[in-house]
Length: 272
Length: 358
Ligand SMILES: Nc1ncnc2c1ncn2[C@@H]1O[C@H](COP(=O)(O)OP(=O)(O)OP(=O)(O)O)[C@@H](O)[C@H]1O
Ligand SMILES: [Mg+2]
Image (cartoon, rainbow over all chains, first blue to last red; front, side, top):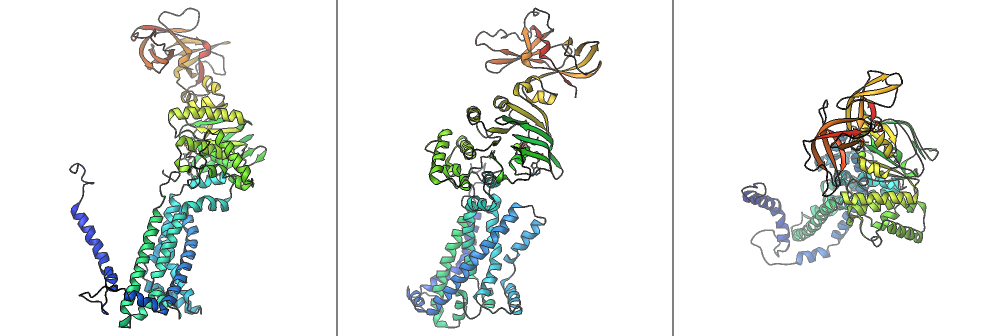
């Protein structure tokens, strides 16, 4: 079997490569949870005792909760607004023959690769020229811009995979465009919408540079971490905080990826 | 009921439908028959309103409709892939169109139950639409459209995805449903047998044009050209030349000889095509009695079709053998083992259709 089907036979070197690749990607990150359970003040080997003290200490820091609340506020707002904005954009890109569709799509996805630093500076210049005071709102604005490409690239395949004749059937059964959207289109793209909400929330929640440039007096959680790095004694509890953020972010992104793929091949969806 | 007047549709440089004019009567079962790409779906989608007309008019029940959006037309459609809503159960699929009509919930439930009864799926209401078989989806699509009591029901190859047995069963059901409800049905199909068995009238389409509109027997017996004749059933075509002398018209037919035909506007010497169905011939081992036309030939091959057979008879002056239909009685087939023997072909004047040569 293996001799006749080289494509499906297990490929040991390739599997090892994949394993090494994954380790390389995640090993550095794994030090963070590791040291967050270490009783020593400094992140260095050999490890000392296992402790949950840093997590407990985190609990007593009021500013952490203020920053968390700021991040949640910005993240939720950004997730909702960028997803809501991305739905019609993705629909238009998927449905209508727009001249120059390729370049437009590329342009929309461009912020994915523009360095956050450049965006941050550019937005700071713009915002201060317009005389808008820096606040969590300006942070949200910056985050919406970097989140839109994520939202569109998650929603676009949903629209492209959707069966157009379902919408035609709805129109045929007497529903106008508004009701057809809510009764047929929206339920089919709903997993994509959920995925987009989760992903954009995570991107905003974890984002640092743009927040650094555009925030006023209220720090987001990553900024709080940055500010606290100056104090060696708070380092272990920052590791604890980072561990929590990592776990939540991983969970959200995994959930988002699962949702994005959900029901992609239901019958009644386009197959041809 | 439906009047299609000089309707054309162009997609970029493709002329999908060219200058089609059709009138479909109330309560009629009307079919659009044609090969792939002949414009059937495009014409149907213009009736439903999913495609605008490039030119021409569509009048339904006295109302010009060509500029009315689909959701405002008194028409419902059964889609080729059924387009059942995958996120709704059977009951909600069937009741989908009732929301807009403001039908009370209790009344909706009653109507859906009646529909489930009609499509022989009682008790399936709570199933997810994705848990249905093809035939069941097809019925749900039908019920979803019929619950709105449309004036016209459009069906785009509704049985195309079903296996043969189920397809034949659904054909019977469609026909009796249509009789019972009296709704005008417009069916698109490329299956000539389906069109002939179901329809009151059939429009044969080719290259975006309607070539012939007739009853099924009219199409079979009086095809207007070679294309229609070949599309509907099996047909023998013979090259021929008109010989007209005074009131008598006859045709010099390759392989069959010279025989009188019905007089027409054609003139002496015109090249024509004589078409004769396999059933138009009678085959006998001896020269047939009576005065009708006849010709000697040789039985080349037999093609058993279950209950009947096609006999292929070679005649002089014609390259292809002539196909002749005969019954195939179990155990007493007179043609068994008769290959290579001389036979006689007889036919009547009525069996011959004279078409323009192409
Ligand atoms: N949206 C479209 N854009 C461009 N060309 C189209 C479009 N829809 C149909 N056509 C063309 O119009 C012609 C008729 O197509 P149509 O779908 O009406 O054929 P059909 O008779 O339904 O064929 P089939 O039996 O294969 O379904 C074809 O040449 C097709 O390529
Ligand atoms: Mg078609």
